[in-house]
Length: 232
Length: 251
Image (cartoon, rainbow over all chains, first blue to last red):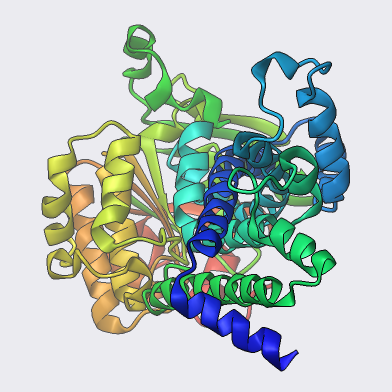
């Protein structure tokens, strides 16, 4: 165990190119998925927060339920669509980073939508009467709410990123854990652990934790600045 | 409601929107919530100019009356006629300042910019509006760190940014110190002198005396009295207003 830890530190400090490649791909896939999920989830969450339409409760239940989507199920569904015989097989996306981005986006877009719906609904309760008095359109209302909730929504995006970067079930099915192509931190950890190469597995685990800590610390410091300015 | 806001009506249809909305005529206005009657049989007229102070004890229906006149809620019965218009059709030609200002989580300047942009007004007016309410030096500061008086002045500047023909104020100075109260009153008086029709809810008798051209006194969801200020303060006609001005408990 201590040997493995020592190797882990050595690998991290030496800037091992294989390690770096895995880490960068992980970040690229999960950050892209987070951005796309936010582009879909934030407006959707805002529309459901502000809208009053029949079937709204059903939409809320579905949105909240989708937050708990099992990654392997998402992986399987994306696999079925992208496989050669599937409806999107002609795109040739299976076992590419793009397939992994698609799977992670599907996994975290409901999280972003459901959490942002709650955040924006709370803010709208405060603003609604003033906005109606100012005669804002629905679009202006949604835009203003998204902007004014920006620091709370940052935390929502972070929750999505956290889920994406830590997830293994979906990316291993649609990515295939191919060396130098689709191997990310979580799939590499699973593989190296099963091979008994605990050093690399631990090194990746340490980096994953440090990234999680670093991203959270950055968002927290941004939020604290915002709190001081009463922007939260 | 907001779908009929006049600012979003196509230009071609706006000719009709330019028709005068004053004087105001209210007839047999009633509002019921879940079977409880909160406003009942209100009838009164407001002239085209001046400042009407709306007074009365808590629960008399003053704030609800403002929201009805502004078109934010619909009456259960009766009519509100702004000229020939329904309130919801002319909401954009009014502005309402709430007792507790709802400020955006942005800078002071951005709070004004937002309204100017949303309502298609000249963005260059922002600095003038902020100077007008004495907040020019605070333009870059976060709006929600302003003091109570400053926050209310910003809310007032934002309301004026929409070029309202009617300005509703719902106890805007209820929790402010005397200097802040006078600053707000000066801005409102200036707007009134420019021809903006003021409808001002207050519990402050001194404020009512300073500002009023006429007084609409409500009690228990009804109009107890609507008189010219010169008549109201020396000799109110209604027992409810007499008791209120004398400081006796009115329920």
